Amino acid sequence: MTSLSRRDPCASLLALALALASMLSACGGGAGANPGQPDAGSSDAHPMLPDANPMLPDGSPPPDGSPLPDGSPLPDGSPLPDASDPGDDDGGVVIDFPDAGDAGPFVCPVPTAGYGDLGVLNLEAFAADMPVTTIYASAPLGMSPFNLEVDLHAGTGVFAGGIAPGLFSLTGDEANMNTCAACVYIWGDTPDGPALWMASGGQLKLNSVSGHLTGALVGVTFVHQDPFNPGMPLTDGCDTSIGTGSFDAEIVAPTGPDPGP
Image (cartoon, rainbow, N blue to C red; front, side, top):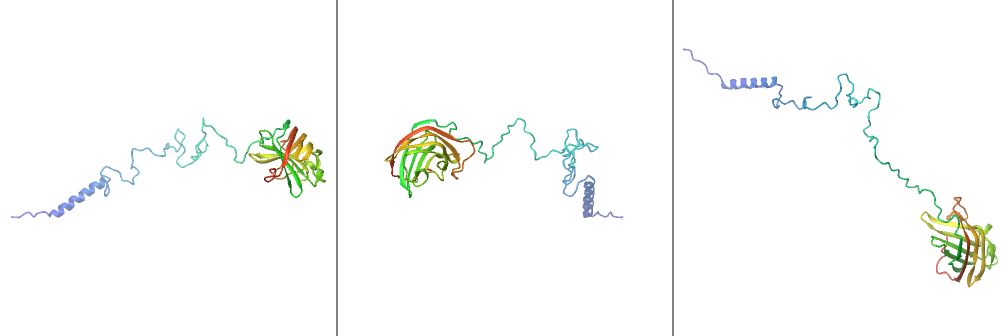
């Protein structure tokens, strides 16, 4: 009686493993893949998401006018939109800020129509030898930031023989800061810096120059000048005048430097 031989169990397990591998390969799975899930590198990794660059079958752009995916212009010839251009801001307010160096139009800080009649000037007078005798006097011009200055220099011009009473025309050498002996001017500080106006006409009347400085200004006109280059008039039309103004001030020794420019 012929006996049946028993099958090798290891060979049976190997055959079963090969069969399972063949079935997985036929279903599209790979090593380590989950059945029913596409590979990570497959173009069908997200089958439910729309194409990021949709195009019609004939290659033309979609009806919404979005550009072609290759970056070429739209069929109507219009350029592609610039992503860096924010476009027009409808309803926004455009503010044009001025240049930092633009101070705006010049505004004359003194009355071009003149100060008129000032009555009695609150003049303070001082005397000094620098090295010749000099009398200088200053008075504020109302509530303005400016002062009226009257400086008398001995040994030159109308005072070549010494400072003396008299009536002096404020023209010629007397209308130039560099050559005047009877110097009458307005000076002060503005937000833009120092400012200077030199007498260019009118008269200075001196009744006394000893003990008290007394006298008057009559019809004095002033021309705007460069404070950093005295004697150089500015042609900006910022000129002024004083109709009349009298003064009577005690002449004292100075307690400090000349407050003038």
